[in-house]
Length: 335
Image (cartoon, helix red, strand yellow):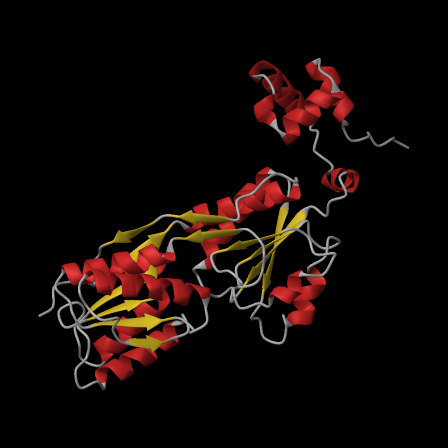
């Protein structure tokens, strides 16, 4: 009977590289602090021996689960893909996994179901992307460190990483008024949503800077369907707007579809601006003028903020990331 060879150990790597086991550990956990010749020798020894880190054993030693939970409203929304990718990139580099929970999934994630995941036995930290959750969910003693990203929850004292939503609204209105538009409609998200509130503040600031009143608004829910429904209401107006700023790209694309079906031309008859720069915005007909927020960067910053909290390091209460206007073919001067 043949004897199965044991798997390579960290001591085997250290012996082959001519260093201590502690140095091998440092190369695996924080290679930037190891001198390059030593790091290269260790990496060659790892490749030669076929050594792999026992993540489960490491997590047990460090009293970690080895994963971070992201709470996302509606995973079907393409907006969240790059944010989650940025989060996963940082976590992967730190030996952590990403677990995603859809807070709006049918039959699933009510407060009790979400609360069951908010314990240190299920996750080492939590990144919240749903501003509609109740702050009481995160007050249980066993809740791991929490960072808010993209949206935020009033009354939750957790660090926030956000895009400059108010500035985005202001940039959109400055672009439209600069083209000569004066009848500008704001298609908002849900009334109490934190993004709606901050983007509305930017819209009003932009209108006042142009010497205009705060202007009309319609409420949507960030979905393609609500943008399409808004088009029917606009088509029925006695004096429709010459331009519409939408609180996200999905509503803007749904709006354009409904307006064109109703016989209007974009941008010849009406201009449309979105927010987010999701992938499909560049391929809409016409391509959508929008406010670009760097979603992967936002995800990376949120993940780094959470890692700082987990390690007991200082973390700013709020970080605001810049946005920019992308001008495409859905906006033009009013006819």
